Image (cartoon, rainbow, N blue to C red; front, side, top):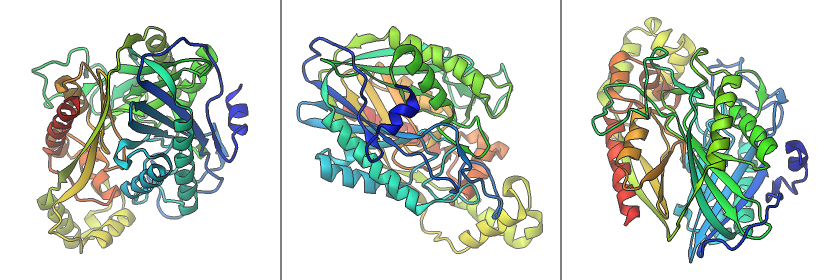
Length: 460
């Protein structure tokens, strides 16, 4: 079926994958199921991801490609977990909790075992507060919440015995570190015990989880790659480069892959010749890498499924925040460009923050982890700089670890200390956009250490 025909066949916006491939008996214990729901936005609502002053908002004028929420439910014995990939810019913690609780009530899957991962798509709306970077439609948000729950319910109903295979391939040219000059970035191929956040890094590795299912159930593919979803900046809605990659893989292999976003804080798609990311470069690099990862995936033995979560407080830099307040209070006319974006943005930020409670010195978040046999997965709500994602993978107790960002909420960028020293966009502007004080320059290191502790806990 063509993608559009497939989506139009959904009942109430929700469907279970319907292609088939025969398989023999799967490894005892593991079961996997998938559900899909259409979340294509209505015309006229705001798109997110780029600065647009009031009155100049980007609004959906057309649909480049339908958008989806895809849910994967895993089961081993009595334990179940769900992972959702949503073609949206981001979800808030509050939205996450509502979906987790609703899905838990309908499926019996513990709420803390349900993870929502935004692809961070800049050609779609947002479901978190962003100052002049895209507004929220409450009606559309309610629709996406409902259909996400329906997709989880459908995925659970689709459970079938499965064997897990893991494939890996470097997608060179599919991403670039936008904070350094072309050719100056060090990559995961060089990353080792002595690597530090004094340098900027790039993770070129693509991981594919392939669930080969028994009987006439279709095989499932969920892959992990690190790159902003930001190729388009027009007013056409759709899943951007992940949608194009999915279309190509479906055409070539008959499978519909789902993206789990990685450490994208300093990473844009494409080879770097276009700072934002050129769609053809990205698809031309990621598609063959994913195809190879799928076709060469090797079976792994899944002997357990475990899920754990842990609280973590991201520390605020309140001294820097007070400096920003004082700078604007002294002379607003000097706060009209650069780190202040423009005069209207700066005035709006100041009005919303001059009376902020100074006793709140950190942001509480939840880190999540899943053990799927020998494979570890770490879920966090940040846009980590690449070093920290690579460090988590390096120091994880698992041979293979997927560090999944933009998950279960969104807290914006988690940069390295150099970003604060240099006054980079991620460290100085983005906190104002997401309406939070800046983080301590060492927050990324602390969050990385907490993530590694959680992975060790779930490893047992």
